[in-house]
Image: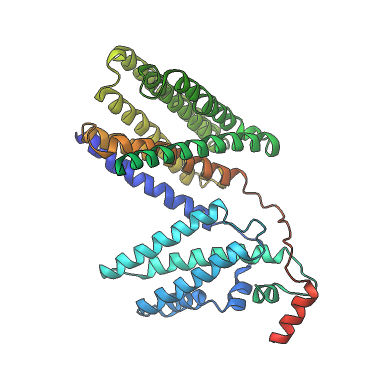
Length: 158
Length: 253
């Protein structure tokens, strides 16, 4: 019984650990340019300013506002992931995994808030996922040319 | 009636999961043959071939001939499961070789250790299976599989730690190892739960879902790792000509 309990605990922990590591490895993907900045400015996304505020000022978090901001950015970016310059009009496998990762991180933020734990790490993780999404969208859009339209003009017309 | 419908849905879900696994097994193998003829993926291709031959071809044939509740199918399923796990063990050894390729001294030591562990695991597995062959469908098979999966999980984790220690830059191998970890960790936890509950309740039926789900997860991560090299995207056809879009933009501005 002791052995089975030990195996159960260790295996469960390792199961979640490997899922987490897979997500982190996807997030570490290097892009040849910082594509996310175009997407952020074209769509007035706010996750960068949230991250900057947290990193530079280390101020306390307005939980409700930050959560709403990140959720709105997430909705905008997942829409763009599916529809902007995406011929198949569906998410790829790694995008689906990252969407799952984002939701898990959002849930972790909720739990941290309820238990009055530090929310900063969860928020930074959420912004990292959003930056990844923005990079993917930016890279896709940059590979396409529509006459004289720039990436920003294209995005504004979707 | 509700129960019947529930049973039907359950079977349907398992069938859909199984077909998704077959599709991914065949798709990944085909992808490697067509797009990535790389010697580093040889061991992975052999394992995928074994997985496809056992899981995608032999098992459905035995199932078709003997039926789901037959003793023959049950024996075939569990014995081939042991074979696949031992095959996965060898694949982890191949991953160890790939990780330690630039450290010949370390690899020589690890190789000896892996051969010893493999002989030990295979020997103990086959001896205990032979001794309990006539009472395979008792608590024995649960405990046996739990230990075998857990041994592979520990080995996978040791490989992961070794890669961290060597600061390996092989991202593809990292993802392949993560896939293996998920494939072993899920079933190991489930078998331990079945063992703890003495085969009663949901954990024993849960494996029917968890097994294919974990295999699906592993294959998806492998696909992602192998097909990651960015390729140019096809350009979608805009609804309006570029000129019109430009006019709309300027009007908005």
